[in-house]
Length: 482
Image (cartoon, rainbow, N blue to C red; front, side):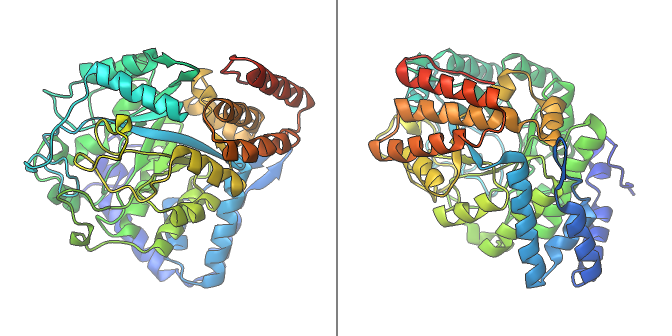
């Protein structure tokens, strides 16, 4: 029997079923242990120092106790601490991105995804490089600067060379004042050599959802295709790191398996990356199973309520305090609004989840991977964020300045990242307001920029940011960054 070892490179040892089950038993036994819960919450709280805030984070066992806790006042305390942590390390900034689906050809048999091989009535489509260019121009005309590219797993239709060509095309498109400055990649688990190629192509974060950490369920949900190999999939992040990609993004698809099991596995995966590579995940995503062509979410009997979903997000934020957290347009405006307070730091806006969807006037449905719950335009999302006190950020500076992996985390942990991120957010927001925003959004946005500039504590940084913003308004000069 495999023994739990977070430093192991074997999936069955760093995501150890016996350890997860023991953790869940421990959490259940202590879910009403007020003294223990209070001590965990106290440990989790950010501590102010001369250099900013410091957080210790939580182990998977400690975090699982909080998730199991059903005491209302303790749950409220969790939410308070999650918000404290979010503000301490990410401030009131929310990073904006959009997914770009390149191809829905796929050889896998995943039971929760409409792109599975046996679905014969969904139209199969793969973008040409000219179509990629057209999609990028459409996204730039919306105001996007950061994309997450998605493609099914198909070695014939979607080989690594196709993905690399698409990345090259995306970075090559300069339309009016538009540029895509960061391309994150969400493709199937691959080899160290291919990860090295992705790194050389200039990607930002490599994202791969585990879907489920429960191996038995994983094998049933992925009955055919290369994704059936649980170990190869679960060990992908270690190969990505070996290939030089130091920003990786984790996630599970909540609703496939018992959420407490998934949560423990997710935190253990983050602990493993920290133990082996010295840096945890750059991001953690929290998608839920949603309706799509050929897919009925009611077929999965582990669906979770909005309340449980919010609790999971708060506990992730507390357990892995320095990690960016992502919520997509799978979720409604109401759910996304609540989640922003308790930990989310990145949201998608104006998303299309179909192949080639951005060049269409109306949102296509025939090649969608999942239903989009939040169907507002990017302009509406940007205005909504600002009206709720969040700064929409189109910043990509850290990646392009080499502040990735352990360098980003060391800045984040010391609180120094705020000296860069806050003014960068305001400058990129000004770009959006100048080039793409509606008059109503401009009015809200310029007021926010003016107010937020005064909150920059460093006088020299404040003055430089103000000058850069004036230059953005007065000319076509763009892409200022600290």
